[in-house]
Length: 414
Image (tube, rainbow, N blue to C red; front, side, top):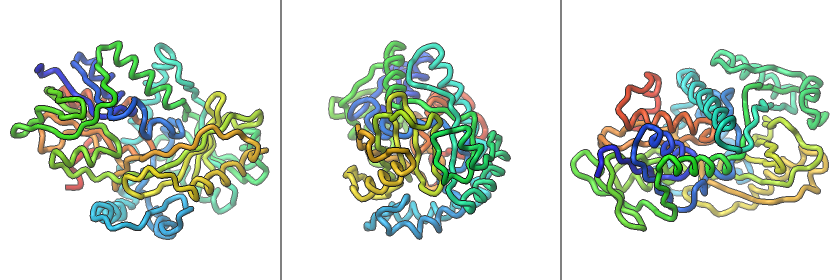
C-alpha cells in the first residue's frame, strides 16, 4: 500500500470532484460508488451555480416558518412525523443555528467557495467539457408587494456579503425575461449566477478523472472499515476489500450510515427534494427563475425545462410522495404560458444531505488522522462541488487550508 493512495467513497459531484483534484495532485485514487456515477442528488437537481446565494438553510425566520409548514404534507418544508433521536437532535441544533450572527459568519465562506467553483466550471467549459454551462444570471421573482419588500432587505444583506444584486420592478423584470407573467411585481436579478446540466458535468468529470488515472468502481458499496489505532486501514465493500493510505468519505445523505461503521456521528439529515423535467416549450424563460412565494426553481436546460423544489425530512425514504409532486407541478406549470400542454419527461426525487447549521462538513475528524469527511452541502452541492474537491485535495496532502474553513469542522457539533 502506498501512502499516496486514497479511496474516495461516493460518486456524486463532491466525490468525483475530490477524486479528480486528488489525481491532479499525484495521488493514486480509487473511487467507490454503490450505484452509478451521479445516481444520487447530483443527478436531478436544479443545475444552478449561485454565488449570489449566501444565506445558509439555517437562517433567521426559517425555524418558525418551518414550524407552520411542518405538518402540511404539501408545504415547501415538511417533516414526516417519526420517532428518531437523531432527527430530534438535528432539529434542536437547527433551531439554535437560525440566528443573524451565525448567518453573517457563514456568508463569506459560502461566497468564496461558490465563486471559486464558478471559475473552475468556466475553465472546464472552455477547455475540457460540454455540460451546458451558461452564465445566464438568475432571477428571484415576487408576486406580492410584501414579498418584494422582503426581497429588498435580502438584497441589502447579499450586497454586504459581496454579491451583485439588482432590484427590478415588474416592468424591468419582464423586459429582462419576457416569459414572466403580468402578476410579477418585481425581482432580484443576480447577473453572475450560472446554470449547467448536472449529470452531464459529473459524468464528464468522472471520465476526465479516469483519464488522469482514477480507478472508478461502480456497483461497489462501502459496508465497513478496518482500523488500527487512529488510522483507517481498509474499506470493506460488496466487491471486496480495498486498502489505502487515506480515505475520503463523500457519500452525501448516506454518510451518516457509512460513518457509523467507524464510530462517527455525522449530523446530517436526508432532505428529499423533487424535480420535474419537461420538454422545453417555444415560450420558456431563458433565465433561471426562483418564484419566491412558491419556493421552487425553473431552469432552462437546453431542450429541457426543469422545475425543482421542496424539502421533506422523512429519513432515508426514496418513495415518491404524489401529493408533494402534484403541489410542485401545479405551482410550476402555472408560471409557464400553456403549462398544461407541456410534455413530462421525468419525475425525479433525491436525498439532499443537510447539516443543522446549513454548512457542509469538510475536514479531518479528530478520531482518525487519515480520514477526510466531505458531505452535507444541502442544496448547494453543485454550486460548491469543484471548490470542495480542491479543498479535499489540500486537506489530504496536509497543506494549510484557508483559515475560514474552520467553520466546516466536521466535529463542531460534538
